[in-house]
Length: 405
Ligand code: SF4
Ligand code: SF4
Ligand code: SF4
Image (cartoon, rainbow, N blue to C red; front, side):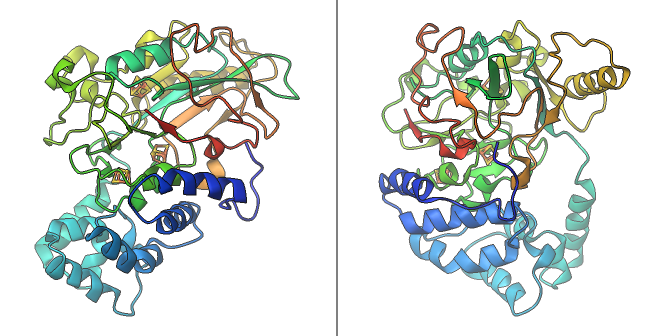
């Protein structure tokens, strides 16, 4: 990964070109998408306030999309004065947003600005108090245990009926200059707590589910602008360009709609963005109570590398695994499959401020890491891989070529 520097969010010419190429394929404003992506990452990195981000792009987003339903949960924490509250009130009145929607955008600070009545104030305060409580799904992935078999990739593709090339789970095999062995990076969506992708979605299709922190796409309202794709530092989004390989008629309805009635599961329809959902249909009990708290990739991994569960529960599988690992370090005792030189835990690109809910044990790829064929190639596993070139060359997954399926 790149060394943290003073300006963690900077796109070089190649990256900007890549983003422009992806966005040029859509009917929406390319320049707006690139600028918003950059600034959404700056918000996550603490370089720009959400209020400023909102102000800066509100008129342009309205002009381009006819609405501005971006999820900016901390919007009013730093809203300040200068009539910003009036603009939010105006949103509620003029843009057809419900008070709840505006409240969600603004939270308790909207109340502080006197936008809502006291009943709403209580709700907002309760919502703020709840922060950090409840369920927050995440993973601990022990890279030391991974043997590069790609079973997780295959299982994910099969369960979610993704089209060829849309590998929501991706395993990079790479060589690094200061490590002797073959290394693996197992990469689902990081389900970031401070996700740039939700900040840029003009229609609110990409959103964070309140009850468990899942970052999902509402397939019914996604317009395929690809702004989320270029804003994500991890390259985990896959645009469904053509007709999906698996037709709707062959997908079990139970795999698609979550308990709020929003279509967020299985592969997306044509023209819509897809990515790892943390197996939302399992978490909602739609595949049976016994599957709640499990994922297809975790289930398929014979090496005990993937541990899924509630990061807010100290006894959950991911927290237990992390704890056991750390204790083994402290006690200097052997831990299953531990390699002597790999004693780190990390989150991917932590300097970006996205606060991922995926924790890793093992080596973090250095800026010199180079992707190589694994012990099982994608071809061997019968998987189409469009992602191979230059993936880790600059140490950033943001440099991956955007995928289309
Ligand atoms: S890793 Fe997932 S949640 Fe984080 S920015 Fe990318 S798509 Fe959004
Ligand atoms: S592609 Fe869909 S989910 Fe992504 S930003 Fe555009 S509308 Fe939102
Ligand atoms: S959590 Fe589910 S959707 Fe995400 S990579 Fe694993 S199997 Fe795929």
